[in-house]
Image 1 (cartoon, rainbow, N blue to C red):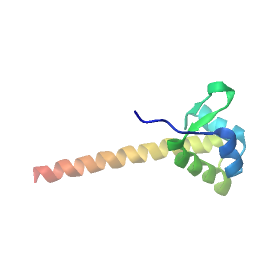
Image 2 (cartoon, rainbow, N blue to C red):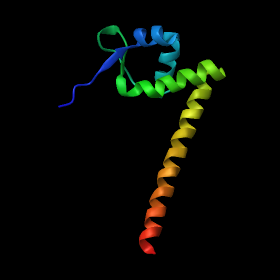
Image 3 (cartoon, rainbow, N blue to C red):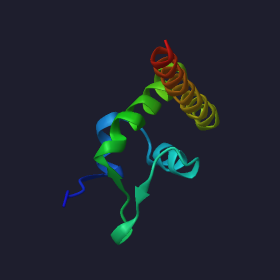
Image 4 (tube, rainbow, N blue to C red):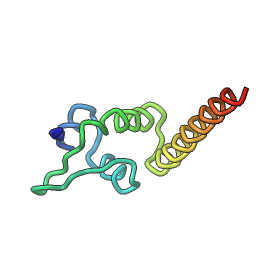
Length: 96
């Protein structure tokens, strides 16, 4: 069985220079999951690339959490459409 690995929200925020309120807002907007065991928030290591991308959007482009939620939703739709196009191309190639 695979052991899950975590990093504390506090450690992430200190390393990336972002407030804990920003990370909690990403949780509230359902962009990532935070485990609140033993009172301290923990992030799954697999969520770090996504959260780091959101931090860059926030810091470099000054996008607020509501805008980041919209971007996250649109990126999900784009990815879904790309997968659908790829599946249709495969299907078309099998019909040739």
